[in-house]
Image (cartoon, rainbow, N blue to C red):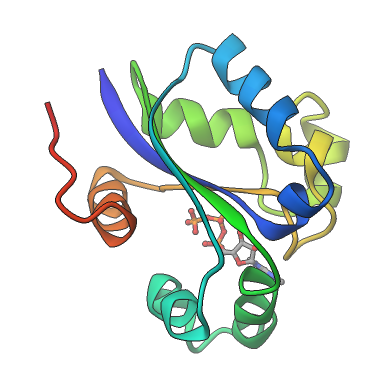
Length: 140
Ligand code: ATP
């Protein structure tokens, strides 16, 4: 068993896709180990995406991620980090629709910024991100 960190982003929450996403992830074998709904402050979004602060899309990303409620999730499954990124699909929703039409971003995303879901890209990112949102989370 492995843990990963996921976000249901503001576009998907706003569009009412959260329940469908929970159904899909359960069907794919993920268990929700922790969850919370919140709206990110600008400071939180900038800190969470700190590695992208010099990218041209950073401002848009922060504005988008603070635009409404999100759901933050700790997911568990065998090989969860890789399996979750496979399930959500390519970053850009248009590419996801063309190349991986069954992926969650293809099904629920909007465009290249508003892409419905986040997933940790490594075990060190997963630990950092879980601790960022779930202070004192205990791994078992
Ligand atoms: P990671 O888990 O490594 O963060 P990711 O698939 O979420 O992978 P990143 O490249 O890290 O993609 O970008 C973080 C977020 O920034 C994306 O999920 C998307 O919302 C937004 N983004 C990424 N690239 C672009 C881009 N070229 N234009 C606009 N927004 C982008």
